[in-house]
Image (cartoon, rainbow, N blue to C red):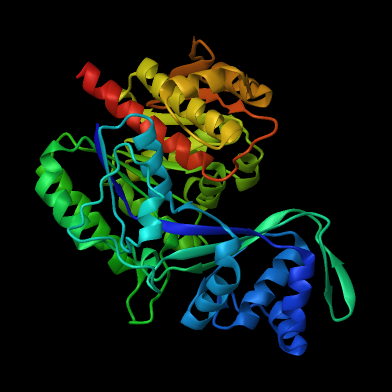
Length: 444
């Protein structure tokens, strides 16, 4: 299979920060300023004190957040202080998914890499990822797109105003230096390659839409960026009538942008994937209470998905959760056995990655996944859907027609002590997409 992968690729710099380090950072700055910014968060990083305030705010409450870095001086401070002591890994949905498909046997995966620095390029799979750039990788420079991920643990303590603060739960604060992916920027070499080779491509997997901002410094809005991406998809589809396009949704901070992106993509892609949090965010569209979806009620998730699909004309949607995965597809294009096989492959890949932190081969995935158990809660939800839609059992999965759609559902496979917890949704979605393309080609 030959697949294009866009848009967001970056470097993740993951650092486990201690309470003592936070105390040192607070002491080095104006405490009054830190207190003011904790009380009235700027939600962006224009100074080191903004960064420290965001970190303190998250550690106080045990919550997570992601703030964009707007000042190069703050990027330099964080890179000089933490980068060399961090775990450096592939970041960005598109980067992660490109690696998954390469490791799982795709013939060719072409990602969009706006800033192909040496570090960034080194993080890609060596099996079948190809970067269509004429020149050598850029030198290590300020143009690198780095997401600084600061993990903190429950029970860590730090001093603020002479008072000891204890972290109530583990979480992370992310300070992101990324001016390109927030605009869905496209490398011209990627764009030209796509146009030249589109007739031979099997699929396109797109993500990163959740990074769009309401407005930009030049006065433009997310609407222009989104329209440009949609026009690109329309051109690709004209060049290749059998091209299959999957869009992975992502967690939006602005519900208005989320609604706009969904409604726009719905008309032009073959499938939209998301997790339960993202489906719950669309409650204003589908009318199903968000709490029901967040409680992993599969029938609620199914009804919400069908309403979104029918209202906006989406051909197919896939919902991935910790406990189960669910797809809703127009009945006239559905093949439940193939759908469940593709999703089952995605489930096994996500489980193997959670258990080991890596993907090596399909044999490796089968071996690792077979040693794990299916979600007990997920199996219960599958049975609830079976009864609700009067469907048919397919091994551990269920499929059946309901309200004009073919519904397919599988329990996930869980690892009690996971090595990896980030990127499981991306792993499922990309592995499922790869297997879907393979099965489609085998049965056309």
